Length: 306
Image 1 (cartoon, helix red, strand yellow):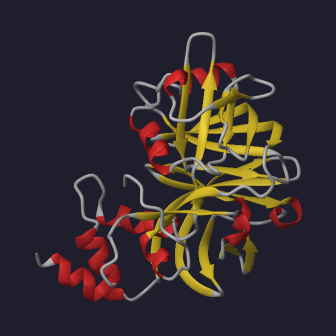
Image 2 (cartoon, helix red, strand yellow; image 1 turned 135 degrees about the horizontal axis):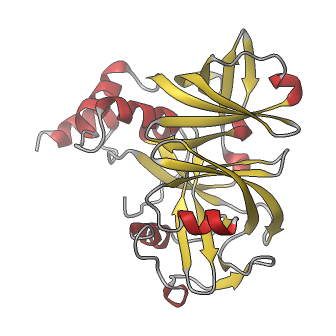
């Protein structure tokens, strides 16, 4: 098959996939993310997140002294490793939300450039190896750029007297300075309205959770959630809400949702962390890393279902 020699020549025979999965402590992440606007270069590494994939949108939080008088109508987000540019994203401002100690910028992605490896390898990857009917050439480029920074996989938990859903996602972000959590949940997820009506949700890290178990949970979470007694891991109840938490998590956050905005295919939920429970010091987490970025990293791949 002709793809095999080409893959071997261009990518040393590496399995071709949209992103690789690895397990890291946050301190092991080498990539940095910067917001370039009006001649300023602002570090948003800890406070950048994806919030919607259709249209592609991001969020970035800035402390008050950096956000003051900042005209972020047009800006560039850069992903760097050891000072080397891996990808850049041109964004436009959708809305600025005052969060008390700073500002949350909601940004629409307008265009991207990927810089990893070389032009031939990038073009072959996007046009040939990753081609699919569901994702356009441009969307494959955007996803690659977004995952130039490792995106952690969390487990989300919601429960009430008659219903429970425990499922994975990586469209989220935590603003530690404000104690605010962002979640971008698909509008088709049947749990969305329940979370919004209750104003409660729990997010858990994936410290020692088995990767195949995580992906199996996500297969039918929007239509047919796995019953608690059939989950592939033991659970404990969260302290405040009593929602199920994987016993193999290193910690969880109980969140009260106070605002939500439809961004497109995803609903952005903004919540206040009312209980940040640490079960294990310095836990690890599963992460998605884009194919191009992974090639230049020292991260170890965890083979999962995808």
